[in-house]
Amino acid sequence: MNQFEALWEYQQADLALAKLNDDLKSTPAYTQYLRLKKTYKKHHNMLESLDRELSSKLAKQDEYASKLAELVRAFDLEKSELEIMESDEGSKAEELTEAKKSIEKLVSSINALSKELNSLVSWCRNANKQIGDTYALAASAKKELDAAKQTCEKERQDAVPEANRIKEEILEKRKAVPPELLKKYSALKESVPNPVAKVVGETCGGCRMSLSSVIVRKVAAGNVGVECETCGRILVQ
Image 1 (tube, helix red, strand yellow):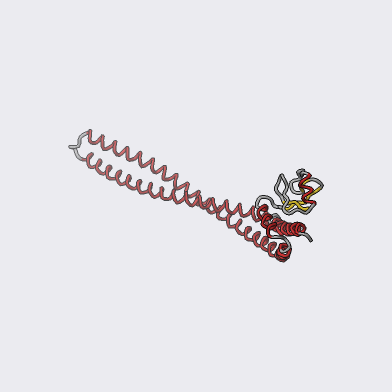
Image 2 (cartoon, one colour):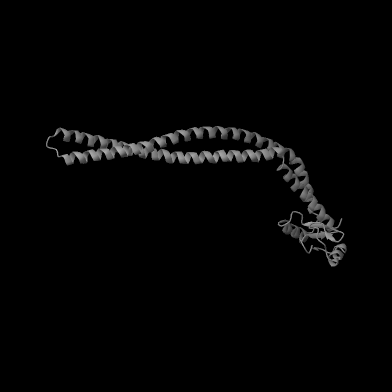
């Protein structure tokens, strides 16, 4: 076996391992696992978003409740003072009018704030329900996700013997390939999955483009490191 045949067989073993890994990532179980993972993540993100927003709304609710309590205290004080003024014959009409206006303004503020507070309470109640529903969906998705993950792990474990066999074959084939060819192969592999291509007629078996007669003759003569003029693959006969 010459060095080019060794390099070609080394690549075939290398590609066989890559195919085995790709096949494991395209099984129905793995496809289902990815779908369930996406679904679970969506529910998880929704829970985090709802939790953050609920915390913000609850803080605002406490703020509004505190302001409402202050307005109610001010209203009670103004009302008490108005009652005193009304019982005092010496009170002026202008003072009574101003006191009543102040009370009306407080009532308006109390009603507006109460409306906003009720709206917040309603939103928080609905958010709590939505969190509960989403949590149930997330728990269900997590249960299915764990089951799918176990199936995928079993598939991967079942493939270990074959993967180990191919890895041993790769190591064995690698021994027959000169270091300079291995170095070039590794560099090319970063840009193309199959760095070595056979010459088919007068075309590159990798990119299917035509080769010059000079290149074809060099490959046929067994020259080292001849590359395709189009894709840069190492050409072998």
